[in-house]
Length: 533
Image 1 (cartoon, rainbow, N blue to C red):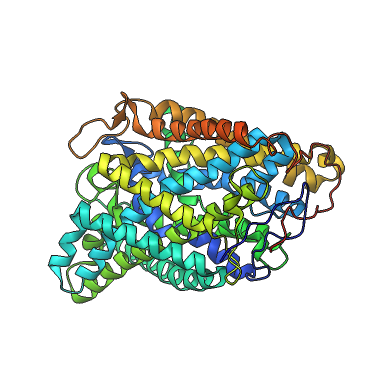
Image 2: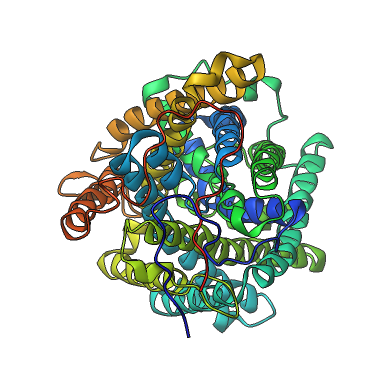
């Protein structure tokens, strides 16, 4: 049994979520696990190093990872500052509406929703395939072979979405406990992988193609921005994406005005350390050649760890166990992120529904579990539908999703940076701290992401930007599929927004979530929440 609560016209006290359920550590765990470190690296590192069979960043991949951290950190600071003023689970949707008005706010919320729905297809595909790979590693080759079956991998992927949707439906505390276990497995295996690879390289027991790390790897500025840095950054941004989940559960944390923002910043820093270590180790051991296990080999791009694992760990019993752990880390990573991707989307739609920006049914809260009902289940069903559609059309289109998601991430993260500057524009010069944390950092982050969005779109639109296993261009209407999916997803939001505006204009007329363009105080404003029934 659920209930819908009509929102008041301005800020009110509670949306009915379970307050105080998460502390700082739990929030950091949610933020880090949402990025799916092992899966993100496995699925993205190859595309950072090369694209279309030609080197992109090459050995400078660690530099791209470091460069991508800069706008991520700046935007995390923007999230922290905006959350101080208004800890609302709608995050970008709510803040952008307050700063720029309903149209910009609605599109910010849509950016979150469509990015999360799309990435679920990738996560489900990986979780489904690796389920068979992991189980088959226990001496069941017939089961392992099912990983290559589109049918059975899709069935398993759909099952993962259903399971994680149910866990999110049952409560935020259960979700956090499961994340703690899954993330622990993931991080331990990644550290093991990096240590093993670096020890072999530095002791001279690596392969003939192994390379001793150099400081120059962290300097990407000798590369061309438009054709190399921007597209590589879009992919690198993808591996950081997800830490904002720590802020989207702000109404369920202790001290919601401070804890979520701190968790977001801490999450980005922890991710930088993890990614830098693993990227250096992978490049050093496997090299960047376009043949063999090289990270530049297009055949390895979708999963670099599977390509590297056998050569790194060998054929011994211990080596086999290590390879099994590596598969387990990617499985736990993808499944954990499947769960945590549902959390921010459900809370974004909850907030949008409370303020009548979408149908009010999505504002319903379960009276016992204190979680969004329609929003959580709706996210699961939408993800399943999208996953099925893309799989039925062509499994090659799933490869186009990472770049397209990068465009959407750059869109709504960048928008949040600009929102922070405009929201606090009247108090930026009140102190040096405010000028930096509410002005310079968020603006720099927003501008960097805007530049990456523009240049990335131009590159992704090239018909030959992405090719399939047979060397054929992956296009839609003759345009690069990554650009079409990314821009098309945002344009779909414009159409849906106009339809809802015509049907229910209250939000768009500022009646439910008024613009706060005259924010002149540093004091945190009351949270935009709605009382539970």
